[in-house]
Length: 396
Image 1 (cartoon, rainbow, N blue to C red):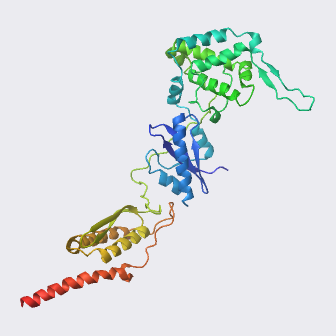
Image 2 (image 1 turned 135 degrees about the vertical axis):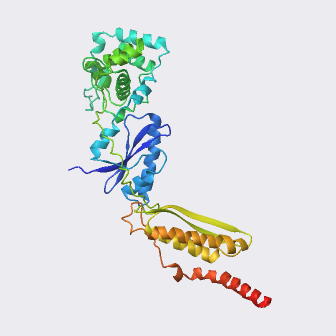
């Protein structure tokens, strides 16, 4: 039985969906959107690197998704019923994908379109009856690899597809199934570009793809669709609007996850360990020297454990080195300590956090009163007390 998976939708800077990072109980992986542009595919490689770098840091699969969901271009963590549902989503072809492929056609090159029409009109039955060579054994016993013998006229027709821009790297054909010969009604223009790219490019790697397309009628359907589109793009697109997509992944309807109910928003997640509940607080530290002052703060949602650890660390730092200038002694150090006390009250109200998803949580360590560095603050306190007593005695 298939298991649910979690995923996030990731986009390129221009907003195009490039793919999905997904994870189950044990692993996290990357899935490209199959119809994305070449630029989006390259952007997806960057996301692929981020996914595996985050997983290599020891984060859980859900922790990786939660971490990446905070970056620009990433969507929220969503649940899919199984991996097959996500594969269907990655196979969706959008109208923007069709427009991008049609934009590759060189509509202004009238000579190239005239050549396309003449080349396909000139094909004879003999040209379409592709014969094969090779396949025989040589005297040494070696078998020659079979290969198709394409006529010059058929080569001319294939080159004409290149001439009008129907063979384009914008269709990543190896990530999609090989198109099939269309039913009655023809190919959509964008599907004709997909089919032309797949057939012509695949021929370089596997002899006979063009021969198969000639035999099953796909090559003629490609040319017919492109010629009709060139003659009247709007009318041809409207006529074929209801035609089933050819050579695409058929994707099941994807139901958007229900919006979270206002009365039960998702609890904030600790920025350090990923546990919840968490409180949005800020802790500060101050360093005051004679001629130098430094300020530090750590803000964001924190669970009880991590928040207590941050409070104790920054407050101890302030108690140790926060007093050694006049402004620090009377203004900044006391103000920092008061702010931290108010913030830690919010953290202490939280219950114990649930399991972390971003990694191990901070160790609060021993309380502040058990840390020797905190008692450095007694030095300026005793000095101030001494000055006050001395002043009172002298005034008397």
